[in-house]
Length: 256
Image 1 (cartoon, rainbow, N blue to C red):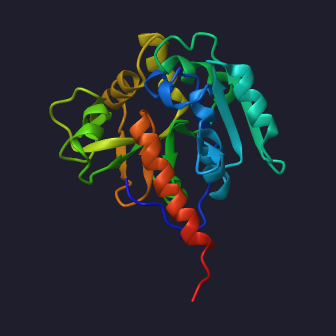
Image 2 (cartoon, rainbow, N blue to C red):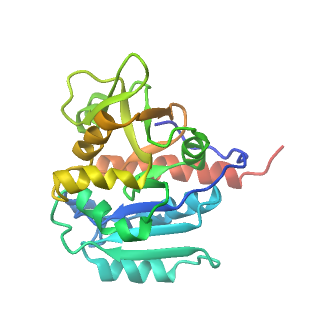
């Protein structure tokens, strides 16, 4: 997690993107003022709008948002966004009470046979972070941060273990051996649904992707130095507000 900055975008080849936005967000409930988590405002825009805007800015215009908790409110908010003709489709996960792989399962038909990006709606990601994922040559990849994070953030984060050849061994919150923090963005192929069929949709995404990594080459993309932030708690929300407000103020300042 670094402070976001305005940088010129390199041209990248976009992919369709699935954004998971179905969860309760119970740990953020005391700071949401009645909003569903993905609609919580940060620096003047909702979490989900920040995610969609970053995707649009790197050229990803074919996007599916998987809704669940208070889906009607989320869908109304998405319809109200100015999309300028960009496609944002919503798909309901009626079993949003299940672990998050169930939301990926809900998007299966929409994904079809295409490679795709997978993002979490409660992870703020800069255009630079997304562009690095799009530049990767690996069909299976997870974006990781190798920088030093606070103990609180490490305790809550999903860790990634890597072998000597740079391939992912496992993902999980409780790994005792790990080499980076999952930043909430993945490059994936639809044949992962082979593993999901075997495990069942009532599984955690980290368990699903660990199973995929045992079967196919699964690599990392280093996002160290690119801004990202997992917004899970009121403290995370305060950090996001400060960092993004500072970035916006800097962008609006007259240039010398």
